[in-house]
Image (tube, rainbow, N blue to C red; front, side):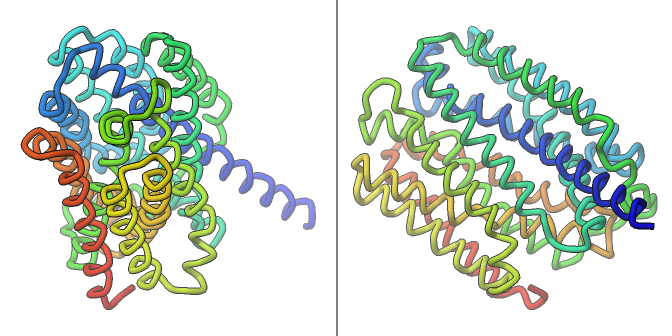
Length: 385
């Protein structure tokens, strides 16, 4: 009896490690791309508006994949979808470094966004299954691994930039690491998430609770998207850092985003979901304003760290709540909330480019600070939290 219990604990832990590794994989691929955006912008000779237009392609691919992801996960299971999507996501990454025109890059980014979000929905559905195995909330820790990967990718990208290694060779290294992780974890994933293949949910409609969760996610993703795509440009153009330090702000953001997610489950247990979201919105707005009001290296680093701490818990808490929906299956509920939330990625970064071109990056970042405040306002109105 004790031996059987021990095997259950070992298998449960192995499954959690495998899912964590694939969260790391998705974060590493995305952050590797984000870390080289300033270099690619310079190589393609894009102005801020031009870069904003190109960046629109990635969330477009994500949006296209959302309804497809929910259907595929519900019909074939998150394990199979995750493995295929992860392989494709890593494969598209080096192609981004081969683009010679803005149109080529845009087309590649559509595929990159499509594969990335397909993997995102599948891996979060896997996380819902692991939560069911553990019987407690651990979603934030999974997203913490995604953020650690973001920090790792940013640091590695800064190093590659300092070495003046072309993005394509940098991305090939990341692809090799990603495929190795897939090989090592493919047999340890959750075979079947509870209610994953509940067919009637394919035709269900989200309730008001899921819709509001989606709006909160959208506000957070606008702020996150700004940090992912524009932090390097902000540090290079506004803070005027020396060559090789353009990724410092992104690294600062990702460091507190990662650490915040590892303690988010503990804090949520003691403070409650609503209070956590209120604090998160306040930190996000404050951090962006600090970076705008004091456009110098140290204050901007501190401001970006506040933003990272602020957004760290929002998406994990929203996804965890959505995955427990009684209206839709986990895959469809996550896809529904993500569909709404990803409009933040869709409109946020390109909007920054257009506003910055018309005014300045400082004005654009001030506008995004309003989205941080909106997280707190929307969260205060949800009675179920």
